Length: 273
Image (cartoon, rainbow, N blue to C red; front, side, top):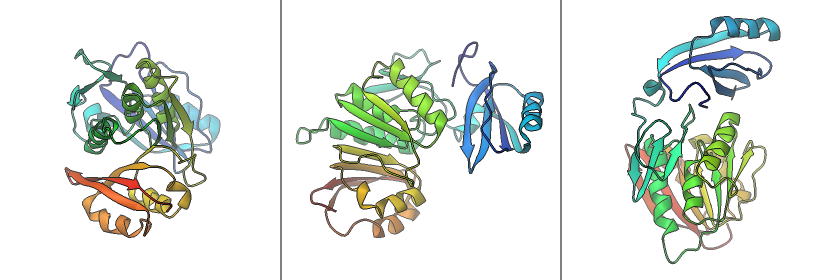
């Protein structure tokens, strides 16, 4: 996350460690980190070889990968700048463009600068304005920066439960929701979805997740208690496998869309699955 004196991201210094815990770090150049496959991955604005070496000595760890890269490379070459979907403008904190939502995108997937999240946002806005639907509660699985939940709360959804396994994503979502005036409507939960789902009996479930996690969630009847589903995070070559994993009854496709080879489904549950 951005903390003084930093006002934007330029370069990222990344350290992936073999270490039995996530270390506590108090350093003005520390962006944040999380556990990936049980190993800490740390991000800084500046090189921190000595600090990381000290952490490894203290906790019995070692660096097995490190990188120095431009922030745009972390975003797969996408320029992190203001964009507009429908009538809603999203901008990073450092962009002076007038915006409805202003985000710290940090190093978390789900900022809207990637086609899947932007496509989810467009679909979300469409169905929130559909007169035949009443969408008052939402579950955002894989909330990332909190963009979808923030947009939903701004457009009248009364309660959003934003869930992510990534601890930095949870911290970032809470901060972004507060920054955009919807902190009381967006409740953040850090959770492993394979260890247990939150209550999916809501009006809208957004799941922008990776293929294998979606496939396993599809097998769980507890996943299919919502009314409207926006599902994304996979490419066209993965559709056949995921389609085969859907329940045989109780769901109706409203839309199947693609953008830059990424897919998005909108499904309506019309009977118990």
